[in-house]
Length: 316
Ligand SMILES: Cc1cc2nc3c(=O)[nH]c(=O)nc-3n(C[C@H](O)[C@H](O)[C@H](O)COP(=O)(O)O)c2cc1C
Image 1 (tube, helix red, strand yellow):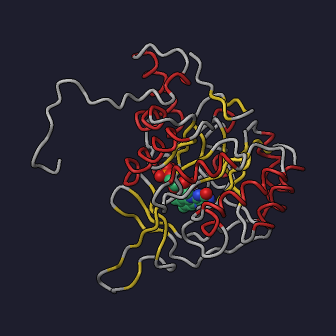
Image 2: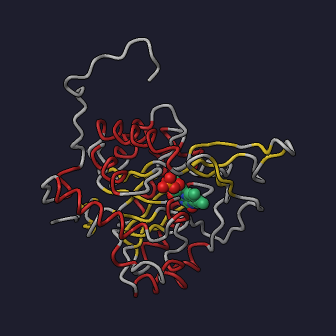
């Protein structure tokens, strides 16, 4: 059985990647997961300098998901390179770094620092965080902004560049296309959906930032649809995510066109999710006689199921 997948010049032993912000700097999970067995680990989003993030409360549970507005708290790229990267390397982890910036220059600067460090496998360009005002979202919600930041970073680094797209736009596939045109090696999607929840007893917001990003199973069908839309428009690999909890969910994203998948929120529910998803994928491959997992990428057949009668007059 061959579970390996290729993202540009990278070969990952399997398609399972820990999503940014849901797996700390990877090392927080070293007692629980053998980091070398994951396809890759994505770091928490990093700016040039340290950031405090938003004051608590910063997360709230919602039906089948959660809303967060952490505000990109992080240790900054220099501390990451000095304190975290050597240990990640020692664990044999393939490390993707989630790069943030308040300005185009900051994105470029962070990427230059990472290009000179040892042990970074790829850059995931965060142009999609929904809950900070500066930087990311300004680039990620504008096609020219996306093109400009991806091109600038592309010129500044030899590392694979993977822009992470926001679902908070009307046509996400056009942003995948702008990224491809600008020289991206792959795209990842989705980041969280802008959302809010009110405490009706106090009539106050449940989190300090009022609005935050919705993640978890609640968003999965929308994320799958977005991956499928991108798959039809771009040739570069797609890393899909949004509410994956088990092997079935991961395979659904791959059938829709994802080459690899990320698991985020489910880590908070079950940190042992990784082995279970991998075993479930192997089981699926056995049952469906799939020898190479990469054969499933985009293998979704959109034609209507034979024998289905059209459903008229219901909203099912
Ligand atoms: C608490 C929390 C923190 C996150 N921090 C980041 C981040 O720093 N950078 C980023 O690109 N995405 C961040 N995300 C988004 C996730 O990486 C992922 O795109 C999203 O949660 C959807 O996947 P999921 O439903 O599997 O969690 C964060 C999500 C959560 C829940």
